[in-house]
Image (cartoon, rainbow, N blue to C red; front, side, top):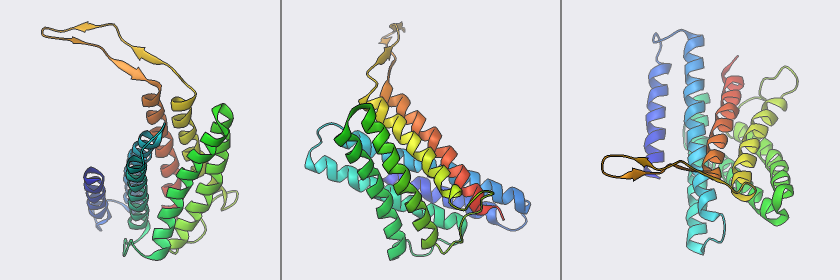
Length: 231
């Protein structure tokens, strides 16, 4: 988790510089903060979820499952911290409401995988995705309340601003899950001869699933921060 913590510290430092008065116009500064936070949050969530998913997929041991759960919770807690620092002041991250928001996020991903495995196949991917949308919508609302924010701005209904990022993250989860449990292919390039060795490039479905998850996470958090920071 050292690299995750270092990345978060770097991101917080960048946002602190951007926020300084006189550096940029107010609107530009707000947009840069939002984009920086969205990219960092997406990278953090991708690293945590994909690492946890890789450890617990299949038949993990008790120690592997606990290790994966620890990674997922730490990632969730740091994600909550980035959100708090972006919308206001970080404060004490270990306050009960903020820890509760991180636990809800961790539990949502665990429930997602449990439901998907229990149902199995393509139906499991669909069932897990539906459950994840519901859980993430509630978790995003809980996270806003943990930092005393008003209902999110939306031209249709405040709930839409929560459901859309939940749908995008759940779609990323569906791509990741399908790449591991439904898709069964590997692309291998012809041997590439170099001077001293031969290189073969291999791309598995799970790797593309991780990329798909990352892209969905970027879109989800960009949507979320844009509607949180805009007046």
